Image 1 (spheres, rainbow, N blue to C red):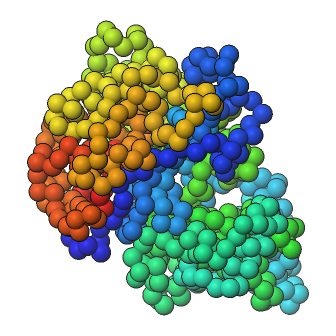
Image 2 (cartoon, rainbow, N blue to C red; image 1 turned 180 degrees about the horizontal axis):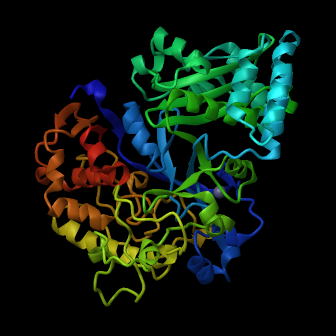
Image 3 (cartoon, protein in one colour; image 1 turned 60 degrees about the horizontal axis):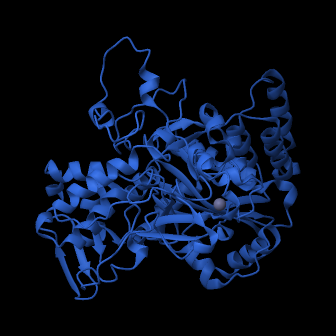
Length: 549
Ligand SMILES: [Zn+2]
């Protein structure tokens, strides 16, 4: 494997900041209840909720290089990228629940609002010379009044326009783009702290290989001709892109997109505040769905859905599914809408879904979940394994088992502690969680990643530089990471040897770059770093990585 095909990453990072800095709630939720991930934590803290510090808790990796197919997989594990930083929220401790949301062109149902947006767009951009075709269309639409095909409407509007066009191009900086960005940030987001450097870092830079970033002329030509792609034609472009919207030769919007093997991911959208009546944000989503339908890719990723954040709630307009990070499956937002209200976390119970089954087909993980341990509350459940085995049925009943796993008396912490004990025996440095509480009073708030206030780290022996810094420590229990019992299983079963002679480490302090030839022979700290990478991105992607330690 060439170095250039690898995922080159930092040690996993976990950081906490006061929720005033949260981009979604800003620490301004009207109900304290809405900060809590689940009811059992609210029940525990209802009386002292006013005095608690709620935080923005993010974990991630600084990425130096990332193949597009790996990014595609990681997006479907709940990650997003901001420039070169790959991150996701700790859905248990974070002040807001950030659900990965994706949809398809078919799932996007035309409401009156969306229809109006498309019709107005068509009126605005169709030239007067096109009256002939407009008349033709009117006649046609009379005979087919029930069906409003937004994709065809958009394609026809653009093909028939002489004043509106868009252009896909590499995600490169231009002053024209930056100036539009500044006007957008200042007018729409009241953000006056913009700089060229920040713009580049946020919307131009990406961790993808240079040839992927630049693409070929052939790729861009094909993409810019998306309206006319044949149904059997496959889009060649994979990688980041800027789609620039021009009206009468003026740049009026920029869509920052990633073309993934499985679809299109919307990174950001900037529009000219002089054109508020165009509803450019809505239009861009419908346009991107239209592009998707022509290029033969499957999903439109809209980033994160945050139910109690008005700025993000619009995403449900386009239909779609949100990611249950514990089952590692997408579920229709409509199905789980009541479970995600008030900023709540959901984990669907696949057991209850299968209750009525006639077949006695056992789930593979049953033995693990129903482990007989009297010290665990009667109905507590271990964390679900992270794998690609589908467990859920997409019809009801929807039972939320979040508290049985992650609640005050859930089984996750207990099972993690049992795993920690065995991991320590195997020479891997983990520390048990002593107090299972996610919250602390404001006055005691310090910069701390962990919900495990008793964690003690040994002095840094230089083996893994900076190891004692809390920023490198993930809590033992985080929804959507591989549970520690599963890490233990990977090690005990010998699956861990799949990393041998594949995973690479680069020690910045010694300047040494090398393969992991025998996981067991690594120091306890290196093993922990490797295990944390596996918790975040899985064993398969870890084997393709180079970790900078
Ligand atoms: Zn928040």
